[in-house]
Amino acid sequence: MVASPLTAAVSALAFAAAVNAHGHVNQIIAEGVTYTGGLPHGAPSNAVGWLAGNQDNGFVEPNRFSSVDIVCHKNARPASNTVKVRAGSTVTLKWNTWPESHKGPVIDYLASCNGNCANVSPSSLSFAKIAQRGHNSGSNPGNWASDDLIRNGNSWTVTIPSSVAPGQYVLRHEIIALHAAGSPNGAQAYPQCINIEVTSGGSARPGGTPGTSLYRATDPGIQFNLYRSFTSYPIPGPAVWRG
Image 1: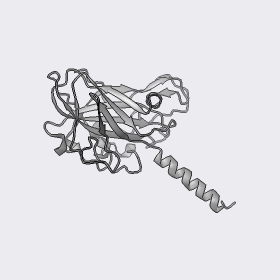
Image 2: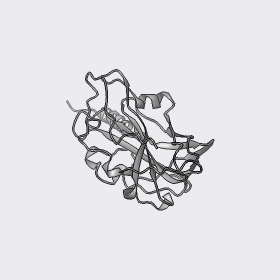
Image 3: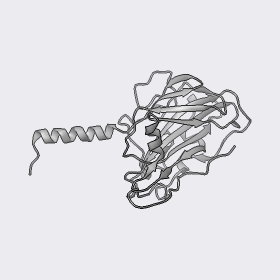
Image 4: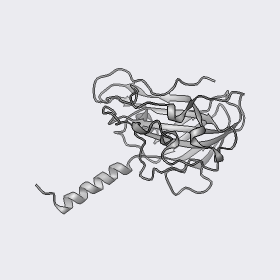
């Protein structure tokens, strides 16, 4: 049976809506100040979020996890501005939207720029995981950190460890959507990088893992079938840094 032009048009619009439903961080709030996120395009020059080639709100697939794409998204370039925040205080990241079907963990990392983040290369950054939340309860598909984000108005709050030394850092904030992760190369990573400047704090400088080594396509937390009975979920990446 041949679809009518109207049916074809409706299907095309539905597909476009599904593609554009993926979100990005469009605002960051810290110390009472609201900053422009900068992703995916059209950001002002004082944005704090890195520019990247994800104008369709797209994702990085597992077969690109060893490439620089996974660090701060595709073709990422650092922003010139920074979020000012004290160690021990919080940064709130507001997504423009997030689809309920895209369930998965929310993970946050920190990497020292060893200077000005405006000039840093994503391939030079080594990340310490500072926070993570994954599976809450239930299965098939269950309740997840991404559901918490949606319930909180598409917002997520992360605490900058109090032991972190003053200086400029990249905060790497990420949702990994698992709705298609039961198949090889099915997981969808949505990394977002934000420049922050820690204005006061301790003396520790988190180091850790290059972005291109955070995950492998075959990690049990990357290739994971939501649509079955399970009681736990192994959040991918290194252990949380404790300062």
